[in-house]
Figure (cartoon, one colour):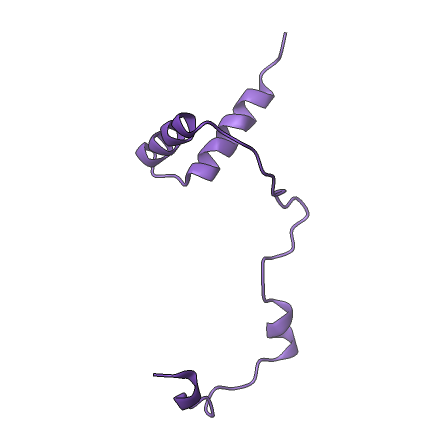
Length: 74
């Protein structure tokens, strides 16, 4: 059905409060988006390992980096 045939008359207008809540929630410690290059074989391996733990691979990589960063470096 094309958009022009949709009847939106019975949908209430969004309140100002609802409109303020649109998008990602504001958090004091939000993660920062970065871009990096990873070898295809390594990425495939990380994805497989994440899948075995039923985790999104981004979260799995984040956990690995946190663990590595928390170890004392000689």
